[in-house]
Image (cartoon, rainbow, N blue to C red; front, side, top):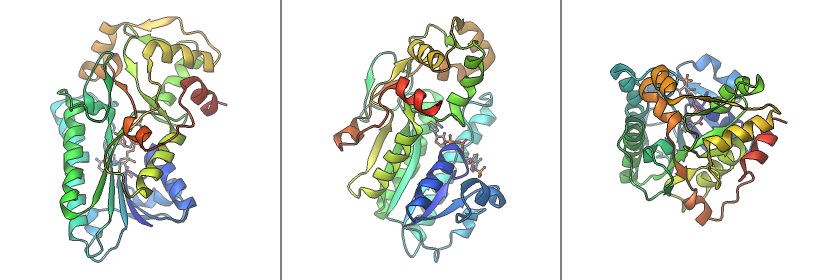
Amino acid sequence: MRILMTGGTGLIGRRLCVALTARGDQITVLSRRPQQVAALCGSSVKAIASLKEYTEDVAFDAVINLAGEPIVDVRWTARRKQILLDSRVALTQTLVEKMRRAKHRPQILLSGSAIGYYGMHEDQILTEDVAAGQDFSAQLCAAWEQAALTAQDAGVRVVLLRTGLVMDEEGGLLKKMLLPFRLALGSRLGNGRQWMSWIHRQDYLRAVLTLLDDQTAQGAFNLTAPQPVTNTQFTQILASAVHRPAIFFAPTVLLKLALGERSDLLLSGQKVIPQALSERGFKFEFADLSAALRDLLK
Ligand SMILES: NC(=O)c1ccc[n+]([C@@H]2O[C@H](COP(=O)([O-])OP(=O)(O)OC[C@H]3O[C@@H](n4cnc5c(N)ncnc54)[C@H](OP(=O)(O)O)[C@@H]3O)[C@@H](O)[C@H]2O)c1
């Protein structure tokens, strides 16, 4: 398949490029640093620097849309929120417009989203039919999804990847947590009762390839392992995986002071279940966090 990928140089995108190239797909990555694409994504991966290069004569069979400014790293000022929105929603709108105009229209758009879509919840089990939340990250995901769904009007199959915390030792949350945990400074966050819905990077890739190939798959899919954990459980399991104690806890008030509105991402959570994937018979290799972390940190 000829696939256009946005966000292909990111943590998830790089791994997807390798997996897709290995099975013979031809990948083109949209990147603001096109000269680095071959080194990051593989020597056979082509790069474009702007969607202006996606003219109506360029043919792709599928589009995978993952691009977006990092959510957690920078304080959410009004300006930052606009940047977060533009890098996802405006880019997706332009992308869909390009797909619509292409003489050879892609059949499928796999578009990024996150479990933040549901907003913050306590113990409620969240499946794909639960409505979007009201907080900023929920509204960001909802707008991102709406922009992708407009491709359906042009007959494109749209799959929304409501992604949980991707466990990858080379980036994202797990990499950030590894150093303090290895120094025995790992700590529970707040009261530790908030849910963390995670997925092993290998299961994430397997799920994406399944949804790409299965022509009957469309709509929202939770990409999370079937056994989410609380932050207390996560803390104990990660500490045990790196053979260190985790005796501290980070007080809520300090996290709120340090992170502002973003502290919600750490102090609240979602108990998400991959109902739509399970109904399709998708089998997770890593349903259990201990086994997942043992595999990633071996
Ligand atoms: N990792 C997770 O646990 C997780 C969980 C839920 C949802 N997600 C979402 O899934 C997507 C991929 O995740 P990731 O962890 O691979 O992200 P990542 O490592 O931060 O990569 C994101 C990519 O998006 C592109 N990008 C960033 N800012 C951009 C901008 N202003 N305009 C255009 N492109 C921009 C970058 O490509 P260039 O620098 O090459 O332009 C970058 O490689 C993200 O949208 C993320 O929010 C991730």
